[in-house]
Length: 85
Image 1 (cartoon, rainbow, N blue to C red):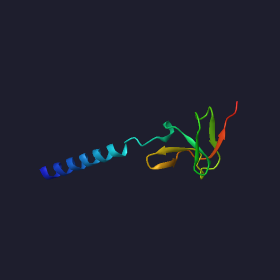
Image 2 (spheres, helix red, strand yellow):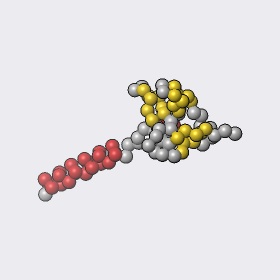
Image 3 (tube, rainbow, N blue to C red):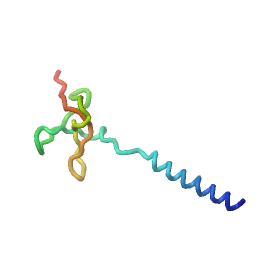
Image 4 (tube, rainbow, N blue to C red):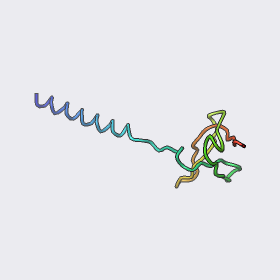
């Protein structure tokens, strides 16, 4: 009976640790400064999403990018569309 109790306790601990890692918050690029690619290698700050620009259309293209230590990474998908007042 003690062996069974120890096995169940080990399973519970492993499940709890695994669940904690699975529920860990992932990086959210939407809170970072967004840039759009104006030309190859030329990135321009976008402003605020929904106020200065929005992304529409296909999900296969990258609308905005963020600057990371490893270089430029895509964040939002679609086509960059500025909102003009």
